[in-house]
Length: 379
Image (cartoon, rainbow, N blue to C red):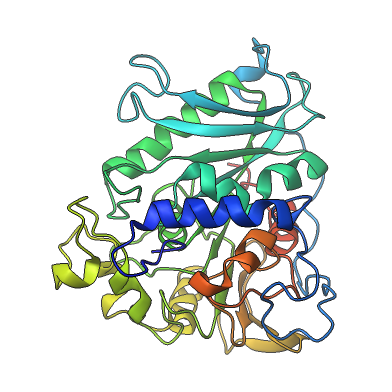
């Protein structure tokens, strides 16, 4: 449910790969960085980024929660590599044979615990393409955190966001593996994702509130039936009002119907008709609007009262609910924005597929501000 809209009967993943190869030289620098003028921005005047408008305070200085990997640090150098979970031990329960991309910052020592950001790709997108979309790996190099980008399952890479699903079990195995093979701060694990990956982020917040400190869904968010997190989970969401895949006003957009069916049959989602219970479109087929979903999240977090709106840029409004400390609920509403990752040059270069990308804000900088302000509470 993301960057791979079909054009006629052209295979979507092949189309996207060709597009990305064509635009990569033009993007330059960090994939998540500013693409410069004329690169598909949605409004935003001159395109200068506005600093995040957030009321979150900096997280108090406290002792870190060192993972098991700090006791016997493995020789892991900086950079990105593919890691496959083994058949036994950590990652052996539901994740055997599955893999993720691990991006380690240059500042990593193997003895000083660092934060972790898990970044879920969108429907059909896959981990390797998504690393260019979000650009969180290079951003993490600058800010000292490890970025983990898991690969979804199935013939079409996707996430089953049903509570109790094998994909959610895989996430638990993934965290076990990361925490046992790297020296990380287990109180500073954060999750983000795009589209279907944003839905997965929502599901993770429901099931792993005791292991994830805060989340940041991009171009997709869910209010999942039966969601009962162990604690309030801080969230900052980003969504464009002209998203053609996950409609801001609720329900799926028409562009979703052209995406490949999850069964790998070569048909499209539209050709399948009504989605099955585990289908990716079911979660938003008749769902509430994005503001309604965030309001439900705010209610779970114990927030009371109407949200306040603050103009951050000509095309971006911060909608923030009045919440208790440690329970932040924010939405960055992008007027005229598409199914996009704000501030991403790769997203901007794919405007013909995803719609406009705003460069008035940088989603990475905004979510990192929220992440830095939150860690798992003691006890």
